[in-house]
Amino acid sequence: QVQVVESGGGLVQPGESLRLSCVVSGSIFSIGTMAWHRQAPGKQRELVAQMTSGGNIAYSDSVKGRFTISGTDAKTTMYLHMNNLKPEDTAVYYCNVAVRPTAAPVTYSYWGQGTQVTVSS
Image 1 (cartoon, one colour):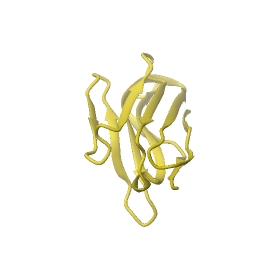
Image 2 (image 1 turned 90 degrees about the vertical axis):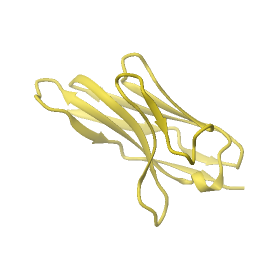
Image 3 (image 1 turned 135 degrees about the vertical axis):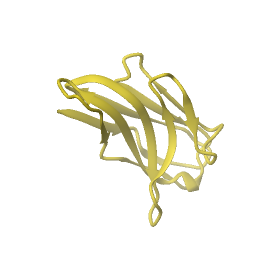
Image 4 (image 1 turned 60 degrees about the horizontal axis):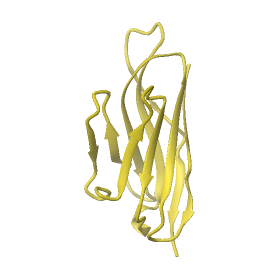
């Protein structure tokens, strides 16, 4: 059993910062690509930032220069540091992790339940 839990969302004013956390736990053999996605009301879920097991990092154009993805060496915790937040960043943010469970021959994609980020004055 693998669990993915996000935290850190909240209500902030434009220009402020937030840090989201994603904790991966359970029977884990290995962790691959880790990513943050978001979904605003009435819109499709979109990729915000991702970090591969090899350390390659990519961001969507809309957050480049403002958001930073990072993680612990064990990769069991991932962060999204969000600076200079804008109203258009308002969305539910989801953590997505590729995990090979212990005793499993394949890798699965796991999602957290999401954490709400609201940017409003």
